[in-house]
Amino acid sequence: MISKRDVASVPPESKRNEEPSELLRELVAHLRQNRTQLREEWVVRISETRLLTAMTKEEIFAEALQAYARNLSERIIPRGVETHEVVGIVLLLRDVLARSLFAKYQNDFKKLNRILDAYEPAANRIANTVAVGFVQERERVIRQQQEAIRELSTPVLQVRERLLILPIIGVIDPQRARQLTEQLLRGIRTNRAKVVVIDITGVAAMDVTVANHLVQTVEASRLLGATVIVTGLSPEIAQTLVTIGVDLGKMNTVGDLQGGIEQAERLLGYKVATLAEQS
Amino acid sequence: MEVPILKQGAFLIATFQAALSDADLNQLRMGLVQQVVKFRSRAVIVDVTAMDVMDSFASRTLREIAHMIRLRGAETVIVGIQPEVAFAMVQLGLTLEGVATALDLEEGLAYLNEKFKVTN
Image (tube, chains in turn red, cyan):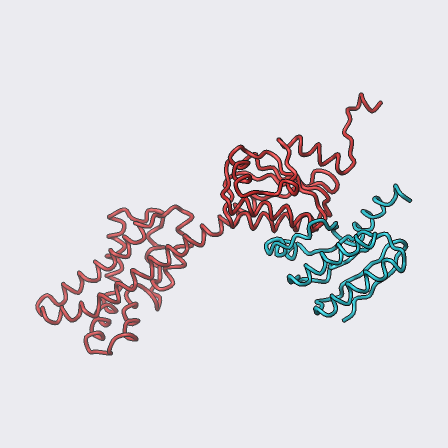
């Protein structure tokens, strides 16, 4: 159970930064000596305060503090551990260790003072490392999820030979707009599309930057030999497009998705007929 | 590097091999404009598939070629613009307005065959 990098062995790290003094060595020796006991105390206090209920006692016990940050975060974030819990346990550790120092040096106030001088920066750094590790892991998860959402939110669908549909739902920020364009242009190439229907019924409003981007996407698609039909423009978006002065000769717009697909079929030479009509 | 101009039936096909210097582009422009009348071609296809960057000069030259060839009585189709290049061009405001474009050589030929089928 006692690994090299366990709870009490962290203070030696501070040697690198501070002058190798007698004091520090003493502090380290003290912590080493009592580490099992201190750790137990830490675990007990964690359990007492009901922090980190998502982890078993053994897990807390076995945790090595330096690898702690990343490792622990990766495992506990999916279980819904809160930031205050993580920071809480580290601060508790700090308290437990400090108290043991108080107990040991209570008769020598000056020495205690100097010991604390050495102890506190190290303890603070540990707290810092853990908190930062936790937050970084959480941010990594968020980034991953954002990426996944973006991937999912921009499907380029082929509905007929050479006809693509790009339904857009939700808010478009400049980054998403860029991704949309990229996926659409690539989709045109891989599906050899001649007509693309971009449906923005699900977009309530867009700012000038994104509107411009939309127009540029339409033009870029034309350079690839595809015709773009934009459907479902809301009154607000129509207003925006008029405000930025879009050349309407370049924009092919139809009221709703159905109308857009019908026009696309006409462009491609399809004629949709009911079975009764055909016979 | 000089751009070869191939005669294919009633059309001329010029395929860009790689990034071209400004001098090459000027030479291509003169070559196309002369040959389009010499061979009595009805259309010119410029294939830029190999170009993964398109600067403003190249883009402007393409537009000039298209307009000059129209004045010489034929049509131009630019084919094979890469997706990234297309968007970069649009952002620079180089939209080749008034010039027909197609996905690749095959599409370009299909477009022209369709267009001239009626008059043939």
